[in-house]
Length: 386
Image (cartoon, rainbow, N blue to C red; front, side, top):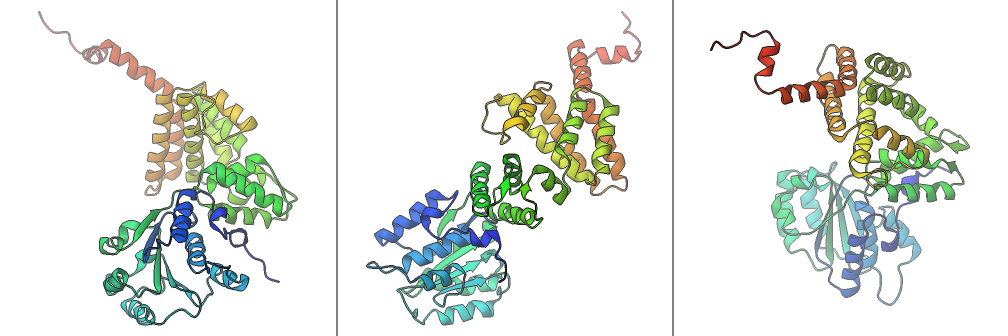
């Protein structure tokens, strides 16, 4: 029997199971129950936040008889995109005007069962301008038995003329805490042990996408390890080791350029790329900046347990201004390295600049306090004649 990915097996099947998009689920559920279902909807949001799942759940809901339930085989067909009345179209592969005209021509046929034929158009922004124009009239006044649900990750590419014919719902990124909790439930269902720190790290790497987080967890499960740890994640993705990254930050806090360069070199020797190291460093510095600005109890940082205690202690060695400057240096150097013939030189120079941040800040402060004329005097400028 073939293996089914976690992102598919643990997909929401009802409005009550939806994670992170409860206001939208509640609105659509109420619209179904009150009979106020519009003819067209536009679901916007980043990848993996539940747009297609919500579209399928909504399609099930509006086709469910008022005095009964949909047969299980029909629900399964809709939730897997294989139903004959709920038609899913990939606009990336069917983006031309001919496909749009074919869709319009098929709209006249009534559904085989249930009151509505539902067209779910995924990545609708990929349609050509001619295809959008062909759909305009049908989108505005479709047959009474037809509903459209358009899904997109790039709403700004959908023409205003199409958007004005739809009820728009914006799906937000799923909070890291919600993703972490769901990953813990999945691991329990899969009978796999996983460290809390590992689940937090996977959730953060998901960047608000439940599907991305579940896909990453799938890769970890494929390793066959009996217990999932942060070390396994670092080895699998080539991420910098947390301990070595902590050593680098400690060296930066102490202004020790030599120790910082040695720690950075150790990270590279472990196989981490230069951009990956800077990206991970910027992410850790961001957490320290938030802890420094908002205090150790802030909810804006997702770390827990020993990892959080270490970050709180490190944050006390910096100030907010220095950390914000260091993050900007990391981001600037990452952009510069992509176009440079000497990326290692830029990387090492960035590490030294980060280690000298406090010294540079002190010099600037001293010069500012001395006043505008002090700089010239310090360079040996001749004094003005009386």
